[in-house]
Structures are given as structure tokens and as C-alpha cells.
Length: 523
View 1: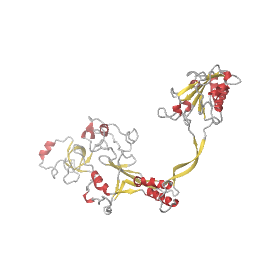
View 2: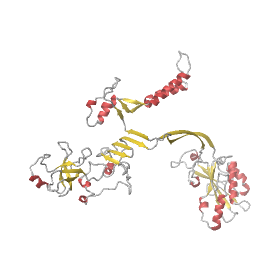
View 3: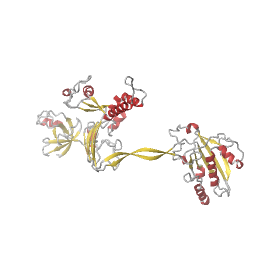
View 4: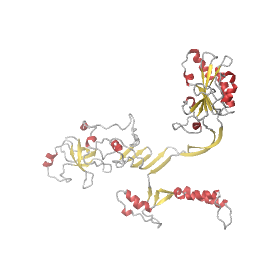
């Protein structure tokens, strides 16, 4: 005879309500045992009763057909003094729905059973989905059969009801997942109690800051140095005008990348349809214009001169006039708008061209010298407007809110009750005779657990919303301000254009929704 054996519950409605069950052993010959003794179910001679092994206040009564562990005091007698422990269990989140086959899958009795998936990440107690459904290994939890628990944390306590999604309201996909995965609900009723080791207070300071202006980009100017073997080479310039719809603030793929506050302008793509190549010869492809550098004016100096000319003059026509003798052919630009704000940078080919030796060193050196001012460059940069390289800033006072340790340094405790509706009920405090309010019929409420219908039909209509005191005080202050500031003849009404009058009327019109909290009811 085994000291510990596996059994299956066949009846759980103990007429004495002691938590007993009737069960048969996994491999017993029930028919032979029943013929050996004359008995009635639940009487003293019943061969198949088992008492709870655990104290009744923490004992789980299994469902019919579920597995239990059977413990026998005397191995000589199979059916005397037998006690049970609910289980083995496959998962902690749904006890009622487990079957015998799934309960024994992790024992030698369940070799042929299909094993469920892991629900926690490897080497951690964090769940793969819906983390927080179970207590951490450092905490302690007492679980209900489905959707409720009590979690004891360090200096804390959580009582959660309805933490998991309702089985009746779950979708077909969720019902499939529920077999092995705890699915946390968006709504539940929870009570949180917690003490922390230090006292923190939220502090708000007013600090001076500079607000940087953000504007749509007007153009992107790219340069290409054709050769890095010496200073005599051709430098090609490409001027892309940002589409007006984009520069006016509309977005592309949900994000406006062509703005001065974009910190990634060095790598922003030239997107077809959003930009337009502007050229002196009127073409829509190729370069905008090309200039020749020399030993006297190496390419980095030429690029700086052109960019500074654009900065000081603003338009392509001024570039044409300044470099007319050096340009081959060309006409006035097809678009002569102010190019500011503009961003300059080397072309991708120029920046990523495969070089080695002296040419590679020259590229690094020349790029490092393309600097317009101390904070614009090297190689690429933003020029904000004619006369101003940098983005102007505006002094502004802003509120900075943060947590600060209290001077006393004491501990700090919190409690939070989270639910859809909160009722604070007193059996002594009767509802005043107001409107259709009636005393709540406490004696008629369900004695085991208040039903949803009772909350909505017998409690909610006969309670009163809690008042937000801050809102009421704000209205009273507004009334005082109006009376203190307004002067008029006694026989004439208040002047409705008075800002204090408008302020008061606005608050009064919103008073019911702002002041009354209908989710918290008192009796």
C-alpha cells in the first residue's frame, strides 16, 4: 500500500460541509471493494471518503473528475483515515477547468499526456505574456480558483479580484489561450497597500530655459567634390527645393522629416515628389551648377564661399550673379525663392566613395575644413536665415516637476482602491429624503456575495456622488472675485461681458460633471 497515492474525485458535495470528498484511487478495483462492505455514500462505512489534509480555510475542494493526492496514515488499511490534497496541478491560474489528464501530465501517471507550453521566460519568473499574473518568487501568493489572489510583497499587500479576463466574455482565440496562459484583464477590482523606505514629495520649480524655434526646411544643398587627388577639381552643387506642401507642415508617412529640429538631417533621403531639383539651366536632372576649384581656391574654400553667398543673399539668382563668369551657360533659376532655412551636406556618393591612401586622408581633411561658423559645420550643417546662421531661441519659463526626498526622511505608505464603481455604505447612515432616494435594503441583499443586479438596482440609485472639494472651492473663489471686482447700479444686472462673469458662468455650466464623482458613491 502506498503512503501517497493518486485518486480521482467522484463527489464533492459533502452534506456535513467539512470539505470532504468521495474519490477512487487511480488503479483501484472499485467493484470488488463496493461488494466487500455494505455502506451508503458519506456514512461512516463509506470506503471512498477522504478528509482534507490542509486546514479548511486554505483547502481547495476539487471538481468532480479532478485529480487529488491521497495520504494514508495506516498502510495496512486502504480506506481508513484517508486525507487528500487537491492536485497535482498543471497551472495556478485556472483550477476549475483542469482535467485529470492535464493534472498528472508532469507525473509518471501522465507519460502519454500532451504537455502544455512554458509560460515564463527562461531563468526568470517573468511571464512570457501578461507578466504580473502570479507572485514573484520573492513574494508570497494565495490564489483563488480563477481570477483572484492575495499577494504579499515586501512591506506590501495586494488583493485582486477579476485580474483575468472573463471566460464568458473572452474571444474564441482567448479561450484557446486560456487553457495554458493567464490573460490579464483591462478591468479588475484591486486593493493595494504599500510602504516605501523613504518619504518622497512631488516638487515643482519654475526654471528659465531657451525654446528653440522649429521651422519647415526650405532646401537641401548638396556638394560633390569630384576628385580628392589635389586641389584642382570640379565641385558640383545640387539644390533641392522642399515641396511647398511639405514645408508648410504636412507630413510624409506620418512624420515631417524636413524640419529644422530633425537631428538626423545629415542622412535624410531626397524623396521623389517631396523635393524638386533646382538648376540654373532649367533642367530637372543632373547638377544645379558646377564650379572649378584651384590651388588658390581649393574645393573646401570654394564650398564655404558658395554656402556663405547663399546665406548672405538667400536666392539662386544671387549665386548666379556672383559666379556668372565661372559658370558655363545657364539662365536664371526656374524658382528664385529664399532658400532659408537650408541644410548643406556632401552627396552620399562623395561621402561613401571608396578611397585609400592620400585621397582618403584628403577627404577627411577637406570635410573637416567646411565650417561656416564655430557651431555650423564641419562637413554639414543647418543655416537658419539670412543674417543668422543659428536657430534663434526664445527665453521661456517652464515648470519642472520632479520627486524630492522629504526633509524628515521618514518612510511613506500608500493605499489605492481601483475599480469601476466605489460604494461607501453605512448600515446606520440612512439616505436623506431627496428625490427618489430610498434607504438601501441591506437586509434584502445577497448574504454570500452582492450580485451585479443588486449593485445597480438597489445600491446605486439610492446613494450620492462624492464631491470634489477643489472644484467647489474654485467656483466659490470665482464668485468672490466677481463680487469684489464688479461695480454696477443695484437695479441693473451684472455686465455679461465682464471676464469674471464669463469665468464664473463657464465653471457653473460644467459644475455637475466637474464637481460630482459618480464613480464614488456614499450612503
